[in-house]
Length: 385
Image 1: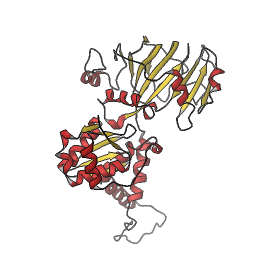
Image 2 (image 1 turned 30 degrees about the vertical axis):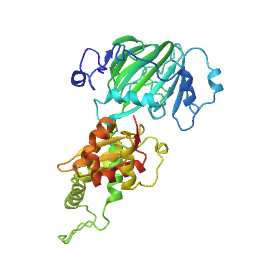
Image 3 (image 1 turned 180 degrees about the vertical axis):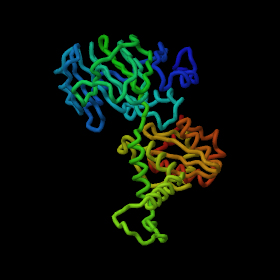
Image 4 (image 1 turned 90 degrees about the vertical axis):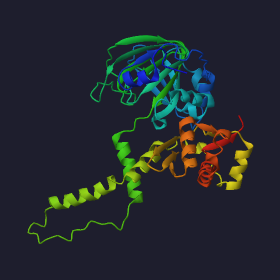
């Protein structure tokens, strides 16, 4: 299925990805709304699911933000206009919503964040704003008018409500009304503003975009945890000084050399980054068990037809010369055999595999060990399809 209508995925990536907005009418021609308003409200009652309620009047001069979990009676207290319920990470809790992400495999797995669903009554909105990440907005129920403006940056004026980051002014460049199955792509930093026309639901597929500080913090933490305390600053060439208060350029050069040695350890950098971008958003969803034996794995292979990836798991891999590092939910597995490499790639790229079609690759010892580890961490499941 091509969700980009009359253009190809290749054309989209070349001409639109992180460059300019795109409206795709009827992107999902057979669209059926997946989650009802009542089901979405039910999710917002749970304390382990992130949800928000945003109330604002049509003039957008006053906003009220509430965080879930909510009480059921809260919704009966709301007016018939001007409010929006937003529930984050619905793909983690509703399998059919998770399957929706299969249509967005034109980008790396680690770039896909989650599916947020918003329900709005008539005139409901979250106000004019911009995001720092790519987002695809699928109209799921009813209609919503979207206005799209120009690019913003850190200096773009915001209202005084810093928590909401609503734009003070937004000049509309394009205006569209989306109906069920229509989709709008908004690149990072482009201002946009959606307003419900009657009862409306929107499925927002967001793409993660870690900041420089997040990457540095995580990688530095990883390096510190794995660093060698036996390596110390050394200066055997030190000579007599007449300025003991001075930190010399030579000392700084030595520090730079120590840091460069760390940064040049590419294997550690790859591992740290891969584990970072596959960390699970909801670790409590995983039921860790004892690692099954090779005999138990063989029994699973003989009695089932399919190995599928847990819909809450994050799979990515990095290919090296003679091996492959598989990253799963914040952990790394080094695959060196032909079979384990093929299985790792298939699970990450396709989200599962047919056992009969890959029987040869599944038979080697390293693959058995990999499957045992993945099964014990609840990252894969054996099923009959």
